[in-house]
Image (cartoon, rainbow, N blue to C red; front, side, top):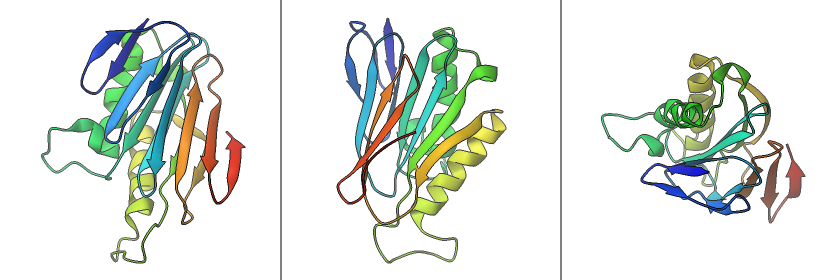
Length: 169
């Protein structure tokens, strides 16, 4: 199986856990699991195609790219990159479903457009809609951090927070 990240392509064993860093994404299949932590105002975007067993996870920091070539850093550019990487692994965009987590308001500072967390979630939803991908579950907002674990074989997204506990989407 190939594991795609925003910077490299490597081969890993089927039972591997792949860590997705900040401003990063990865795609796996089989019994693999994707994890990310440190989601505060960042948004975690998980995609899954049940039929192919291909899953992808992105950890986006900001809502919109403004000429920066780091596509994984932004919700609006990481979604199409993640979809392309999943298609390379035989996923079909017409079967993909999305789950979102994160987008918290970690600080009291916000602009007239809302908190960065709110804007990250909105940008992710807009980018997914442009790709024709439906959001089927979300755990967003609040004022707490989250860690995620995405199981490729099932599409199950486990969301953990020190303040709220664990939930499965």
